[in-house]
Amino acid sequence: MMQSELLIQPSWPTHSYFHSIPSPIPSFSNNDFIGYDHIESFDDVCKWLCDDDDQQMETESEIPIGNSYDWSPTLSITSNESHDSESMETEPQTGIHDLLTAYAEAIGLHQIELAEVVQTCICEKSTPNGPTLERLALNLFPCAENGKEYLKQESMRNFKPAFRGFYEIFPYGRFAHFTANSAILEAIPTHVDSVHVVDFDMGEGSQWAVVIQAMAQRRKSLTITSVKLEDDNNNNSSFEETKSHLLNYARSLGVDLRVEEKELGQIVNGNEFMVFNCMVGLPHMGRTRRRTQVIEFLKVAKHMLVNNQGIITFGDGEGGDTMANYPNYPSFFNKKLSHYKALYESMEWGFPSYLTEGRIAMETLFIAPFVSSISWLQKWEEGRENMFSQNALELKGRKMNRESWNEVRELVKEGESPYKVGIEGGNGNENEMVLEWNGIPVVRVSVWM
Image (cartoon, rainbow, N blue to C red; front, side, top):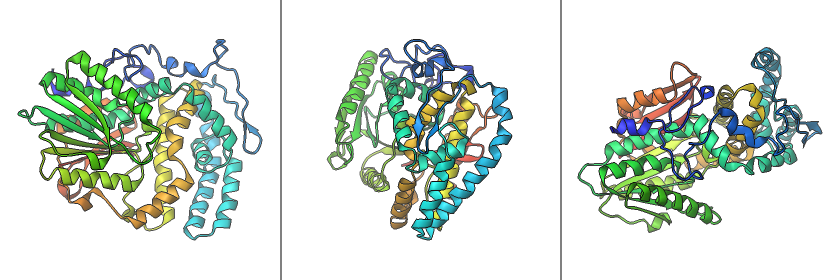
């Protein structure tokens, strides 16, 4: 089997609701990992939202939120009713947008009291089942905390099926992993016997199934080192679970795999081909990392590649925040707003209207953690103090493979969907693949050496 076939070969049933996008991840024998071999229909993704008593889908849930309004989405809304309501949503969305703009300008001018007044107005106008900007605003500010916490707790009860569904339905994570894995497997020399992956944020290990399978075909040993960061003190059980799944899968294929967890300072040079993989802020991860941690990881990677053959793959799900492009906070705020609005809209496009509760649950788990006025301001301040880009490290870009570009365009069904994939990169490097939704970048993956 050719490398391209390995990376894009579907291995579980696809669903017409998300346009039968093929997956680059093979099915696992262990159903608790990242194989989705038992999902029979799109409705199954969200059936965990229903009561165990098999109550009807149109049952309404009343949740007190903020200023005493109720959340009562009706799942029986038809697509025609949804389209008819678009004109009705225009005016509220415009009003919310103006208020959000006013809030950002007030913060930029350090007019805190004015910003708080505007924030109160925004909270009064926001609902969890309203138009896109209303839902964004609800997560952006600490309003309606009781309702948001309820939604989060209810969604967390079914995190595993939600994660599986989110990763399969939406292309964000699969695009990033496919692009990075394509570059990694293309870069590995035929003569090396061992490959060492240093993963900045391994999470559930979703990315590495394809690489393990490739190592089985190439008869190479593999080491995966998960970087232990300062704020990962309570994440040991998650690492051990992921480690167990990866080892079991590798064992089933006869791959010599070692999985370990180390701090950056504990990683030493070896005779292996080195892969430094950094995925930050991809929606399925449900978390972000501090910019200073990313910078430190890339500095260590550059230092170690001076004497080692290797590659750096960098996936950015937060829109590529180069602070030099944003002269003031309102411009940065509006860029963030545009980025996450595009994500919300792309999720709506991928969900039928009668599964509103399922979409809201997935927004709560995987997008809401990135949407925070406090976090955005901290990123802005931190970024202005530490102006940085990968180019500042004087890394050499590795050109993207055109065959991989064509394959990933097929993966997201470019031409049949609002998604588009482009190749970018400074100084003619063409070392960056960009996934766009209606012209707005939502995920970037760059490759360096």
